[in-house]
Length: 285
Ligand code: FES
Image (cartoon, rainbow, N blue to C red; front, side, top):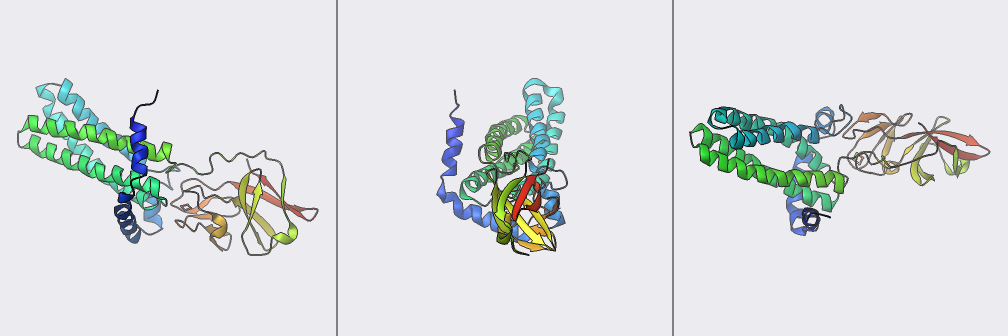
């Protein structure tokens, strides 16, 4: 049995009318938030996972706690419910900023449309909770409860869309997670097909691999960027670091480690050798 929510989310993926506003928001954020330490902080490069989904938990938790107190706690818990709404409003600010950072990295139309509704809906959620907090502060308890109850319903919908972005459309997930390898040496090219200083694309066990030859050594990484699937073979290489052409994540060629985000997962690395005039690669464990 499937609830009718998912088809509704899939309909949002086709809403072309959202494209102009989504592109304006994304472009504006990108013009302000350049690749670097602050972008990595917001992306979760330091955490090893995107940081935005983790921040949504306390925000929604505070607000849901307030709703529970409103309906189950009685009069003496009214001040506590108001404080929980206030905490949710405060924690929504870093949650929104990290969400905008992720939004700016979305490269394709379908997830950007869903993310546009997700983000605009959450602006409405925040406005309702702020109005609820103000109403409660002025002593209009029942108006405050009505506003926060409406916000709770709306945030449930926007949270579903956030889940759809990750689990349905793959935003924020490690793009190399399903690349299996036997760990055996695999012949991929003749030696002549791999010149010095030029990224070359090859295929090993159904996985595209970027090869790079420099100073007598051959480097090999999975070609699909772990961040959002950008083609590393089209990126620039400086020294032994390759930069993804999509959002400028940088990976060390020798081991796939992240030199700069927004990627949060290192790139799968391969051993490489020449044997009998052919280039062979083997996925590292
Ligand atoms: S796809 Fe985003 S940095 Fe590579």
